[in-house]
Length: 495
Image: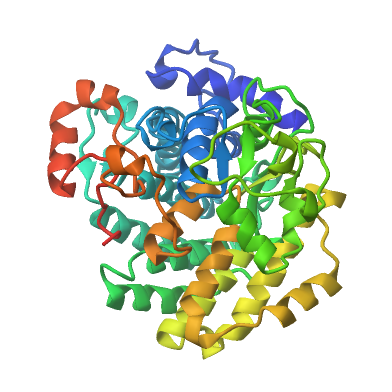
């Protein structure tokens, strides 16, 4: 990570300039282009967020509360259903990762280097990750014209339909896999924070991301969902926790740039009695005697004994009896603070649960839903060891848990997606998107929803006010296509 900070000092020079490289002084004895490896490092770091402030509001205060994994007692429950700060994800990503990945793609398409084809395939998978997160949060977004202000002078990009974006993302992943499976050399090496330049792991990630996108479409286009899911599984998805996609940060409380896991910093920026585990989440873990309860939950003093804790009800934002209402444990806020905690984008556990669902729905993945479900639970518990000693769950406890909570085919989809909700704790955008897609867990809206959102839980983020001012015609076209720009407006795949 020390090397990364030095790299960022260089990369930020182009990342903070809206006009790109044209304003940089050019030394005729030096290269005028930054290497693809340096650019990829910057892009991967900033995909997780430039700092904790933006992440705090869209990820923690909104999405994690929307899916009732946590409560923030320092805000009224009305705040979590309002549109404040939902613009942060859009504004941050378009000015950092979007314009940078488009620039990298342009550079590699013109390159004559022998590694350019494989470099480009990896960049394309990264691009799909970035845009899939944005479209799943907002719906229709700038896509084909995004990030081209400097390259092509497109200052006011059109908003592409989500259905078109999905079609292009899936096709892009398919083409990238074909290149990555050739096993050609790439120039990234250790600058690739996910896999160290391992083509095989990138191919698995591309297929796993394809499977995620496929399942998003089950309600709007079930035939296409099945076709793409089958293609992804046949192509080879993640097979162990070694394939997880995450960024590991520095072990420092400093927040000058993306040094620290922005989620950890978000939790530790709040007072000890402000960040609470929701009763919805806590009670689910407790009812199933889930060993993850002591890993994720603790009192203000860091005690993880379940008997000392009670979950924070979604309509109770009082700060009384602070010690009895569980805080975040290994993620910060109380107990163990892991500043260098991994920030996950996709995990093997998620993939196993998706394969289990594909087995239930279509008989795919060998048709053995129970085996994939068990593998998913085991992987989700084992990966917590990445947070240090407090995250380790002994194998015997995992075995006991599966024996006490066996897969029930009659409740297959509910059981699988409830586990997905637990496994994606901390990856709020994925928890939120999968809840919308699957309907699980079954959540009850806040009382205040009756007056703020027509009694409904939010289903998307609204467009930034700055976009409505600066790019009004294209925003208006997107709003007309989606049927509104409300927190409750349903996007294309969320039918």
